Length: 176
Figure (cartoon, rainbow, N blue to C red):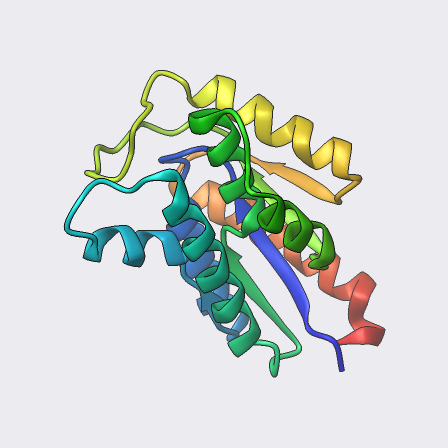
């Protein structure tokens, strides 16, 4: 059995973690937290480009732990690390790109920046969410990934995502 992986992605402060938790709870399956948040929180210094490789390896290791489930949700994946590296450092480690291209994801839920910004010590660009959203969208399209944009606030956002996932599951049912 190959697990179906549903990635919640998008710019900072677009409700990815809440959405991943809500979807996992609704469908009774696990979700993979964003490894970068835990890693950066334990650093005793600002992160640097070299930390992104460690974060990428940790993210993959976390994903692999959940491969025993028929499907699960991910609060981000290597695409975010690639985009962030290119945005912040103007390039990305080749290993991260190779691993990103080697990983198989079945559906992306791309969160629109249409909810209020919430300050957080790890968030850096409150005024660039629209620009970053377009970068995510362009990357998903250039990679040929299946994605659906998620918009709306609160319960409406979650309900819209639930319906999309229900449709995905019914289509992929023979594999789950």
